[in-house]
Image (cartoon, rainbow, N blue to C red):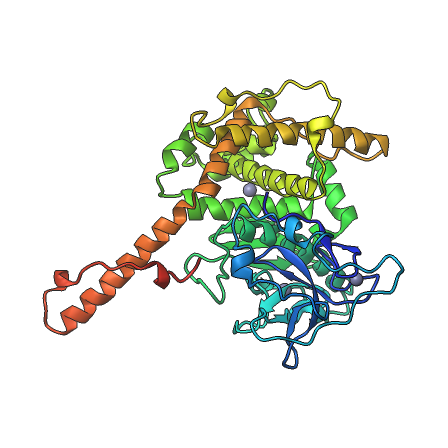
Length: 452
Ligand SMILES: [Zn+2]
Ligand SMILES: [Zn+2]
Ligand SMILES: [Zn+2]
């Protein structure tokens, strides 16, 4: 479980990830992306600052570091649930008055994009020099909000940002590196261009290139996206799906390329040095191989090992987020009356891994949940909730991705890179001082790592 999606206002009303205000009591809400919590807010001690809402006389919340560091094992629902949050009384007397601001509470400012069509409800620590949140500061280009010829730019951009926040929140809670290529890590960071195809072309292609994810804003237009989905014979096409797929390419560059994971990648996904352009062309001309459902999560995954990786990565994020949501609302598949042949441990990439059983449980939980939700969708006349069938080969690939994500192997590499940079710097200093360059010892320190 990451952090759950089950949030509650101090008045007791359920509130949701996208909300910037409680619809029942009007209390402003803000999302703390490090803690994975949607917080009811009250004004802080200084103008423009905010802090978590506290009832008068209620004990102050523990500092965030003590409560839930950003780890994979947070279960915020336990601490912010109805038993703990001061709820409105049964007589409807309304919430208790807010307690005056106290020192020691985490103080926030609101993201600059709250008042734009992005309607960003994320919080920024008050000591942070940035005026935008961790999701919004990843944007390099946004649609022109003043173009009279494209009055829907703001509306479409709002939809794009909502999907992007859903993506970024999970990346942060998974402990993945999420630094802005613009303002935080120009070498290895991530950034976004949200572009619209000009009337007379050229057509904007959604894709990833060296840390830059480009999204065609037309993908936020339901009618246009659905037309493309149909033409491409895809079972599933969403903004969030695009983001999860494209960010998979980014993390391949970041976590797999040149790393000790390469052997495992080749074993499962194949040889990525295959001509990429020719592979795409062949897929376009001939379509996927007839037996693709035996090997891949989607037809598109059969195009090239990089696309297989990105499709599996997207699925992994779908599964983590959706299971997280289900668990945080107390939805358990244990009581489902469902005939189901579960995957067995030998389907995994490393069945001997100490956490293999846990991952297998997660996977079978997912399969049961989606089988039931597909049936729910059909009972409403809607397309399937999860229009995919996981073949056993894809299960091994998903387990591999899980091991990569949970190992945090890139932290070690970053520290080594930092150590190398320091060594080079010191060598230069020493050389300038007339000493032999190799006299400088390699130093590395966790505290000096720039980009967690
Ligand atoms: Zn409320
Ligand atoms: Zn923001
Ligand atoms: Zn791709």
